[in-house]
Length: 387
Ligand SMILES: Cc1cc2nc3c(=O)[nH]c(=O)nc-3n(C[C@H](O)[C@H](O)[C@H](O)COP(=O)(O)OP(=O)(O)OC[C@H]3O[C@@H](n4cnc5c(N)ncnc54)[C@H](O)[C@@H]3O)c2cc1C
Image (cartoon, rainbow, N blue to C red; front, top):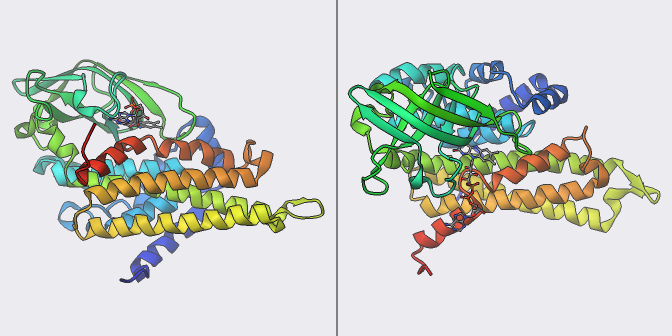
């Protein structure tokens, strides 16, 4: 068992840290947070660093699938701002990884080289006004008529839908068909006729603005079915396929980056702030909070990279990835709230990173499969009898 980070991974981490230190200022982050928008140019800059080709093979214009490197990139990009890493995920995971796993030859040839350059980003249209965790019950309807798909319905919480090039839309494609075999994924450009997007404000995750998306008789070619027309009614296997395991690493990697940033800020604050004639970091209660938080972050980090290693080596990971999603996000949420406590009122005020870390971390136990859903998954995988 070797817990040492490989040299190329440490070099990658250092490169991203230098990039962030030089090119992402706190003023920029505050402006992106306020506007709920990150300029697309940032993705191009990240592409120039060579980070966008990390999830798919050289034969498709990538740099080879390196799941540990992808996880490091998400963690490091999330430190200055969770949504910067969210933008990266929308390109390399939603786009790169899914298109390589499930796309047709034409979709791979068209899309993947642009992903590598940071010139395409994507949105995931799964959730709906009436459908959250129970995704097989989606109501958005798709009809395959000749060589066209006609779409009617609505998606909700669709992050970055209004800035994406394509939305992966999960459709009910055969309402009379058997559950799980009656769904399809279709790639829909947000500027297609009949698509309207409207921002829905959430308390955090700013920069990846969540949208309501309406589809009113939207027509796209059948080639836009993920994998091509032969994959009609096979959307569930594409959603629950190999890319899903790696996707369960994305949100915990975001959470770890945010919690590490919160710890850095709280630690520094404890060393500077004085009360009762001494630095607050000298009070035992503050020392214990920070020491306890650091320990929990170390446990979360070990679990995240253990799981990344399992997935990278294609070892069984269905229960392990749910454990990782659940444990890392819940632990990081606890640590961020502890860090906020260390900073007193300054942890609640605008102008410090902390209030944004708190807003952002709270989303991580909800999206990407809530904590309850991960716990269900773990109990099911270990065949615990259901009530
Ligand atoms: C900031 C943000 C960004 C998002 N971005 C996207 C996006 O880009 N694309 C997208 O498709 N969605 C997105 N979502 C939606 C997200 O994936 C859903 O919120 C999530 O799947 C949960 O669905 P829900 O909120 O409707 O909750 P529900 O499914 O209605 O669940 C409500 C509560 O019941 C619990 N629950 C539900 N079912 C069970 C069960 N079987 N057993 C035990 N407990 C259960 C849940 O854990 C939760 O606590 C985003 C959400 C947020 C907050």
